[in-house]
Image (cartoon, rainbow over all chains, first blue to last red; front, side, top):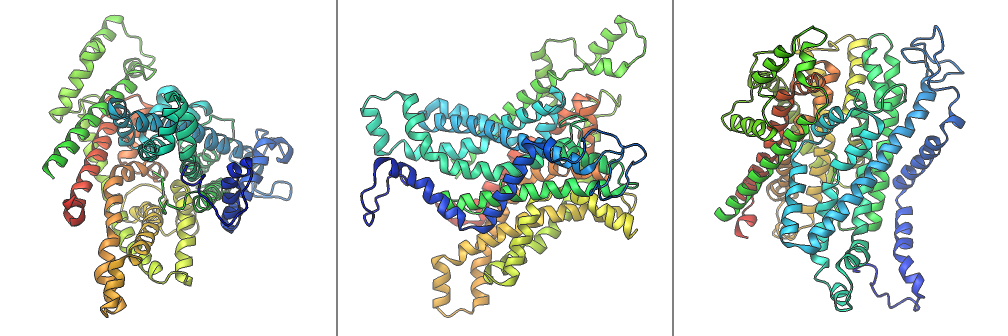
Length: 304
Length: 308
């Protein structure tokens, strides 16, 4: 409760609910001051709307093949031109945002849930449980991530679901490490002792008292991690191990771009720009959240 | 210190053991038997299939297959490729790794030579135009997918300017674009790291002392700050060796380079499990060794850690 219960003598005694909320409200105030973070948030918001309603914004179908238009350059009706079999690139870009966001957010969610639980249990219980879980974390971290993902995608058969699950199941180790270290110091604190004295069960102490106190750093790590996960997803799709055609994914579009780079070089431009901007946007939001929620953390990049 | 080394070695050994079990299990559950892939459509009798399975030990119980694999690994024998029959996996990996390591070594050296001074300069001239340029370009650089950078370099330098070949390593010209991609990726990361670690050190007490005793600013930075600021760079290099090698998988695909990455992807696609297992093991052992060696080197170059 280090930050949540800090006393502010200059302020009038606030009501109970206000005290509980103010930490997040003040975090939001601090975040708003970081302009790149707000720009990133704006971009993510626009992208989210596109990803939820692609059929409303895409000017054409993302699977319709325009005859005789293979690799044709942009026109007014098709501002990004056509791909190697004559589909509208802009529409495919818009539909592709769905895959990028879905994988980025869902896989992060899976990783956060597993990582926080493992880290909190290991840190709070200690002893042989901690040793065992820590060795599992070490093992996971010893795998070069992309190599592991390629192998798993091949073993399980590539699909959108596979990508979400395997990225979620392989990227939780960093959360576990951070949470475990924080919990190790938290469990010695008075409020945990108080909860123990009051007879709370271990599960209740971990989930109600310990975990809420480590969420700040976790949220920061997660927001910085989404960009890295979108990069991983696009690399897998680029290698043909992601969402399968005719689903539009930016990485998959780049794979087509590579195959036809000598004939239709323009196909490879737009998907890469979108990947870069999306990753950049999430990284900027992460930077802003780090300044707002977790001033202790330094400039650490977690791309692997 | 000796106790510390012993504990770290034991932990590393346990991790490698667990990696070997996990890797073996993963490859065991791969759908598609390498034998059936090998014979393809050919009409072949059950006896012949059994013979092939027996030859590769695929008819033995799982734990026996695992133990045989591990004991061979310990003797430095990675087995033979199932698909390219008769070729030892060790030879295949050695050939491919030479290419990958050469590319990465050149790329990494160039990145460090540029990133360290750039990060240092940005930190000592904080809030200057140069600092902003470094911050903006590294922020952008971290977000760039390396395979897309490769594609765009091909478009510009091979298609538009016609200076360099788009694919392959026929002559030294072929190395330029892949190395450039590696440099762009590493540069952003390293320059950022160097900048932030220099900034941290500039705020330390020993810097104030050095300034107070009248040292010129160039001596303060050159003699006191740089040495300390380089420590995180050493760590990153040590911890990331294997990640860097595996990170070039996609770059090798872009430029059709016969390196470790391409060998790995081809082997995954052809279910050549002997090769896949071997590459995963080699890279994982490299991670564990990299971490261990880095920690030890760290103790050597940073006396503060030895005292603890």
